Length: 247
Image 1: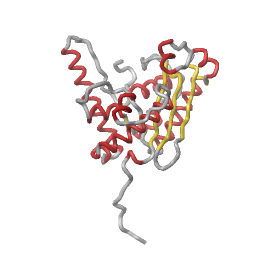
Image 2: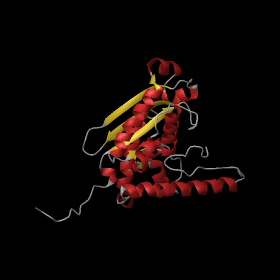
Image 3: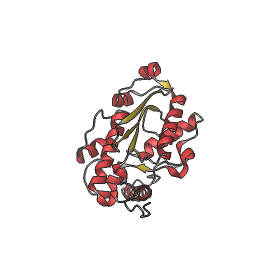
Image 4: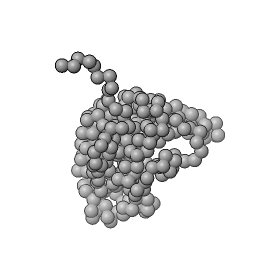
């Protein structure tokens, strides 16, 4: 029996299995808008991609502006969509399995999608993800990482912009499955681009992103107030906005 300890340890977080999560919605207000489509896709780790998709009937009309982005009309959601409460229950359950398995959850702009999912769960009496998994939640947010590590690069930081900058293929932009897959590809590229980032444990990376986002929010709020927007408030919470927090 070999009693020599294994010094290799686990592979860097970006080289194992990643799970992308993305939603398309009725709008951009996490407190009141609804999920229309959602995707969880597991990629990497020398295994085939494993996507799961949901089309929900949100129970409200989908504004034309939102339909123009993701292509789902109110009529289609009513005709083909799953009952929202049932779908939200399934999404939370699927994410719970992934989180408890220790798989990094890749979410572009996590405070939007995770907060919206949290509010949907509460709306339908479903136990929210964070209450189920507790401190096991580990998120990789390409938007937060990119802004922190390349803060002076000009231009926007949308998923499309990040895909272009990091030379990642984006298929089906503004569809939940296309965006979730692309976010995982960007996360992998970030790990390749920045060795110090790849060297962080998943726990360290999660904590670091919370610090980065809080610092960015404080700085941006200060910038806005310096330009005369004295009431500007930028929420520094990450990866989820607390219930009753700022909008």
